[in-house]
Image (cartoon, rainbow, N blue to C red; front, side):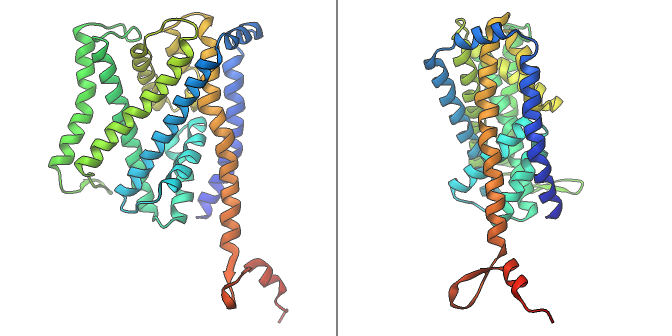
Length: 326
């Protein structure tokens, strides 16, 4: 518990520092005139549409946790899972190494609400699997719907469709495994209990819907500059996210920009990606960090309160200080 408390204290300043670095690295390559003109080209309607998609994405991410705690055998109210998920991911998205950074925040919340460390680990693994299923499902659907075309991967036709089918084979195989395998899977000291088929289907749907919403936010900003196809954006975003997950680059800095520039080259996409980063990374972080600090202060204060006669409570620290010396 002490280790996790120190980790939380470290995560907060690290997240602030990383956010500052991300802003600097995102903007340093461009002149202020390019940045100002690009941002100014995004009208209020596109901005509002992107913001709605961002909100829907974070709500979808909270369903990852809602399913996860149910899978762990400790279902919680949706309000609690929304609080834990949003706070954890708003920090984890910016810091990088999301399984560790967001996992530490999840641990702080869920252990307070009755989950054991083992059950929290099950939630974290469950959410990680849901991410992979969502990426594979959306990527496969986007490729097939776009007749196998991917400008980023420089493929089209049969090769693209084959890749799309291979992507869809991942969630399909997972669903079949959940139907067939009833016993726990053991990998060395790890034990993985397969979820029910309905829960697995929920993972696939919620995972794909989340990334569809994120791609929708990027698309809403890009169409302010050009007539960009949503399926192109979706497949490109999936590809970029796979690269981000493999590289653990905080916030996907540089990876997302390089990917999107393959769809809309030139300075016209600068404003779109800057605004996307503000909406999806920095605004949630500005809410998530204070939420974490307030919750830490609240639960620390609550943990110090002890019951006394008559059902009242008293600060344990104050009571100790007021005891006469012996």
